[in-house]
Length: 314
Image (cartoon, rainbow, N blue to C red; front, side, top):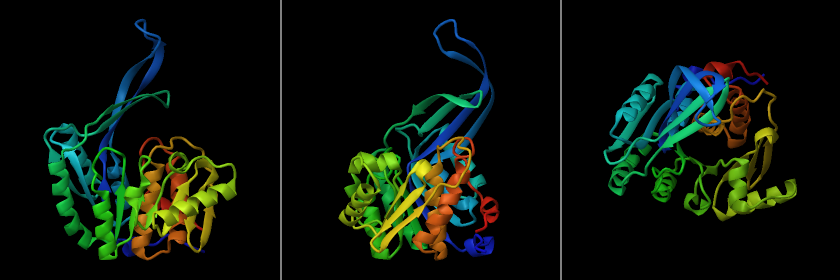
């Protein structure tokens, strides 16, 4: 029987997360009528929640699994940044948040009625170059303490200097995992692994007709970008790991899908923790697939805990 590593083993693992952080706000309420002003539902809000989002959700996922986690990012100098710092401290994450007084901290506000998301409102602005360079100077110090680095790109500007970060990781001999964003994957050249979802990879590589064509595209991009591995998460089709020595496919573990937001964060957090523990990537993917199955059964950017993983046996 295979079991998840114990807390004492994982307590020595050190993961550095760098990327775009945000504050996820949820307004929950009842929907009983349509507005007389426009054909939209009226939500009577009766509960509000705040959770760390983006790279901050990856960091709390790492901490929830029992590893040590440092987070490096940029926020505004505002109330949302204070809330985010406090929430991360409560989750056990050591957060280095560089403040940029000229921007607002990224916020995603979701309005939930009858257990369904009715609306999302985003507040965001890119950070200044001076603040990004200050963050980059801190990266070297944080890198020395890390066993594994996770770069979580949500396209908000915090990873403007991602090429330099990957280069430093390579020079230090530290594995670096990247959750990519956008169409320019060349900026991630030299990373240990990329973890795009199915639609993100199709945006870069083009659509495929069958498994053979997907494999050809994935292996071509893996070689082109000088990656040790490319992991494509494929929703109901599971996830597939492409390495030079072969392919590992993990089918979806049956769960009722409640909310897919944050599933990718769970995957890369689990991979990072287990690589820091000394697992092979293919072995870590097997556990990450199970963790993703748990994550999608929960509302919003929920994390999967060490206790959750302890309940899984093979």
